[in-house]
Image (cartoon, one colour):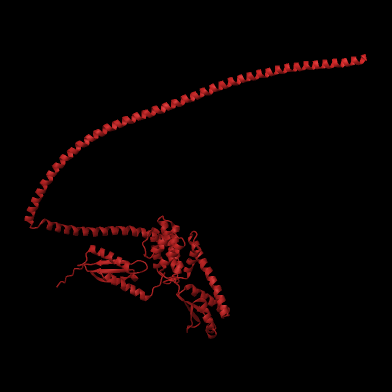
Length: 517
């Protein structure tokens, strides 16, 4: 029993002792925590004080820097204001000096105005005195000359007018001769250079096509039973076949040269093949038409390549190729256009102009001739519309319109194209002209020359490229002869259409005859 109590008391004492120890430890921990917290607080306060001090220091530095910047800005503004004030002061001083100078000038002008008024009064008095003297002298002269002042003035005007007219004609003659000399020299050099650099074969083509036959028997086969073959050929080609007594030959006639060429080639193929019947005829004609179209296209492309011209619309190229089958007075249209393009390009290069544009205008100048038998209108009008439709340059369009003088030329290239067209058409052997037209042209030239007053005789010479007009010396003087030549030239240009140029020569001859007896 005592042991149990002792044990129990031991347990109680141990528990009490443990609790005391725990309480002591807890007290010690609280003390340490308080010390640590105090230290943390102290460190925090110390850091806060340092941060506050640093912030205050930074603030003072920034404030100082801002103050320095503000002082600099204030100094700069003060300097600008001072400079502006100085400029204003200088301007005010300048204005003051100008005011003083203007005031002095106004005073000087006022003095001069007063002097001028005095001189004007003096001049008016002198003018009145002179008028009085002139009137007195005029009255004395009228009494002496027995002629009024108006009559004397009229007579003087007549003499002056006659003298001025003579001097004007003489001056015009002198200027014309000088201009002709300069223009002739320059034109001679340019044209000579162009012609020497370009040589082209002379081409003369017939207006109808003739197909040779191997025998007379072939005519019957071409005609066919009841004329079926010849009707099929004419229907497929649009060409008239003329079968007459000409041995071993058939003539093809059509206003369209391309149709005529298709018919000629097709007929030659049929004759060579020997199978001549309506179905075969249509097949051969269609194949030949495609071949001709390809030939036309190739001819146009070859012309473009030969001239070195840049890109051109395909339809324009095809129309250029069609000129291969077009003739004018026997001259091939495509060869003529190539000649004009070469000559115009060479002359443009000599003058420092756009050579490519001149070649293009020269090649397209007769574009309308490729379709003038299909569309109503002149080839000039048709060609200009077609070129404009396909977006050609305005210079090219004007060259087409003006190469026959239908509209005025607006560029030097248009003038060059017209000159090249004349050169190509007028060179020997380039064109044919019927005898009837030739005689009519010569007669008309002589009629124009004889239609002017004072003309005694007129002669057309040099195949119509020159007319010589003999005038009556008692009715036409030397100066009037030059005017007469110019008037005849203008009338020929207005009333006649002709290739090349026509030279007008007026001859005035005085002969004195006496007979010794």
